[in-house]
Amino acid sequence: MMTSATDSLAGAGWLDRVYCEDALDVSGGLARIPDGSVDLLIADPPYGLGKDYGNDSDKLDTAAYLAWTEQWVDAALPKLKPNGSLYIFLTWRNSPEIFVMLKQRMTMINEIIWDRRVPSMGGSVRRYSSVHDTIGFFARAKDYFFDLDAIRIPYDAQTKKARSRSIFVGAKWLEMGYNPKDVWSVSRLHREHKERADHPTQKPLEVVERMVKASCPPGGVVLDPFMGSGTTAVAARRCGRHFTGFELNPDYCELIRQRLDALDAPAPASQDDESLQA
Image (cartoon, rainbow, N blue to C red; front, top):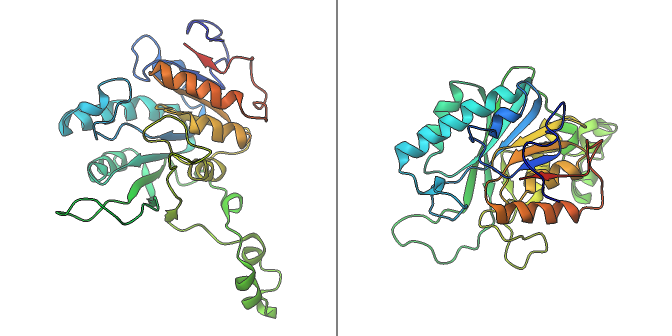
């Protein structure tokens, strides 16, 4: 059920909620989230590619877009705990400028390439086809939280057999798997994919859950200022973390509600039964 945005905001009432409003809303927005309360910030902002997100943020020229990015970054970063971190989805068009801006505020840990596994057909005849997104991984401090064991990728049977010699027996990395590299080959969600929702830039759960498991402790809090289809909220719920965030498009807010309602697992120690606020 939808409720007024002014209800139930006392104490930790902001947990496990998606506010149906702009994250930069002067009467609410990110000001609703206490400073220093969030373990992980995941941001998938409009890219400036002319897609319809329900407002005009994707129709800005480059200078205005970068200024808007700096505005929301400066509003969101104080919400992170001292050992918190940020993942931000970008395209090659603006990632260099945004990386420079972020490196003035945080430490850059990785540039991750998400290979969307796009078929090599069609595309422009005047440039190389773009088949990846860029993800920036940033941390506030040297002691940032990172749980490698939670995201290790199991070795296949052939690799395990080849490395079964005595010098490898009992090796933790062999038993638990290898460290994911900075190129993530995960197929985009095609129209017929069972996970697919009605959103132009929906991210796969596999990508977002890797971020959540690695960079947010169990029971911790994930903030997403641009919830979109709600993948961050779904990933957090599935992984036993809390979520909070914003989405200004009412249609996407309803989509998020439907995706959360479809989950079997209950929210971890949720404050009440309402997962969205209008």
